[in-house]
Image (tube, rainbow, N blue to C red; front, side, top):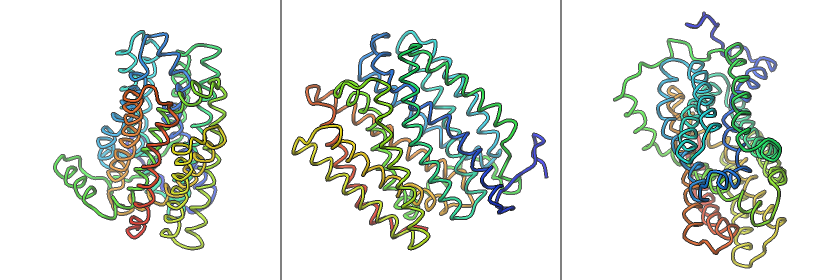
Length: 414
């Protein structure tokens, strides 16, 4: 059977060979990399962009918030479209729109143009992650899905480290605009490979007609499904942490601790190692015990992270090492919870995995926007308070909420 664009339909689950699924996994990881690089590459340049274009810290923080807010909203549109028209066309369209947004950011000379470029980037990026997760759900069994979703989490951690390092080097040697020209070139490479190599996983007979009322009904069912929401709630709090970190980290490390942009990127190695460790804990818990045990372990680790941040906030135990310990603990828990919760929530509506992944993406990326907006608001209201204290206070509350929701959500895992 062939798709409308002439390429054969391909479901790796039809051939369980390790090599086949490994090749499919590599494609998904590669496609997903563009949005992760796009979100993190310019972080070291934020203070410089603000100075060059006379943009305030709050407005520069808003470029992060608006990116993830638009990302989350348009994810709701991309999900039904992927269920109706197929996964491949959505991903290709998303990459093209993301490239256009990168060009707009690269030529920006004022805040409105930069903001417009970030919005266009977000619209394009919104078509990729949910669709990619739906392809994973189309293609694999439960163990494969958890494993690949875990690696997607690790990939996010890798680019959380690699993208700021690269962005720091690019900014220091070629100027901040070069970050967006790099995204243009990288996007073109990914687009070419995707067109040539990525195959469709959703056959026509499994597609849904694009209709507004049924879509709204499906989204309503998801939002009122205890299994869907409660299994995802701890991950929502983890993504609030991610948004808060993205907004606060450049100021904590570059301004407060006086690290260079490149050193700031290198400091995030702690995070990728922690997320990777959490991923292995997650897989081991599923293989030897159960999803429930893995979920509660992840929640418990994050509670320890909250205690570490409490030491920073209440007892003024400030320094790079205490901060890294607290961040590492949270990210280990994050890496443990994420693949289990994502797999469970999307499995509840497996027959509509595109829409389920879209709702999942909307809630999670919206949570990143919320975390970023909360940090920006707190920084504006407490301008004389060091950013590390503002960040720590917020994450104490987030850690406690994550632990409570993980214990409750573990009973609803599918």
